[in-house]
Image (cartoon, rainbow, N blue to C red; front, side, top):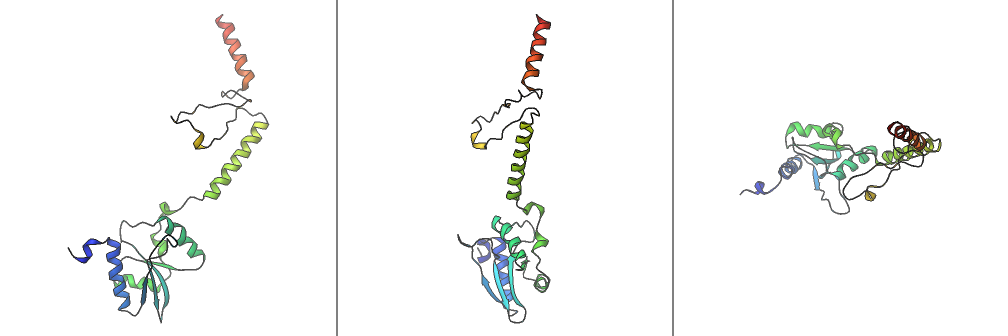
Length: 186
């Protein structure tokens, strides 16, 4: 087994790319993730003439971003820190280092993280609307319960509040309909 056979495709590309860059005068540092720093690009590269570059190595096909990269790369972009993605140790890939940061070219809509703050704000607003509607007596209102409060079997029955019984007509309408039905039957 060769030395290349026991590593992931990205590590094979990374090793070749480091050699390629060093041959062209770049100082290259491997960045190793740990419990305190995750999501940073694979390589920190510096050239006396061209300056610094943060380089993330990806496979040409079937690549993905880690959760931490999905958070950190947009943060770095907002802070003005460029990230370049290279997929091979070739002259065509090397040219990317002399253009604008290219990591967004690899970004897919599925990489977007949900905006949890916006989701919570939306739920808070929905709860306010529900309470206002309930206070105005506009039909049955249901309360949101945390998932942890749901029954183990997953079966949830709708429980109307005092303003209604679940049929949208209020408690009095149901009792009136029930009385009409009983009178017709009896």
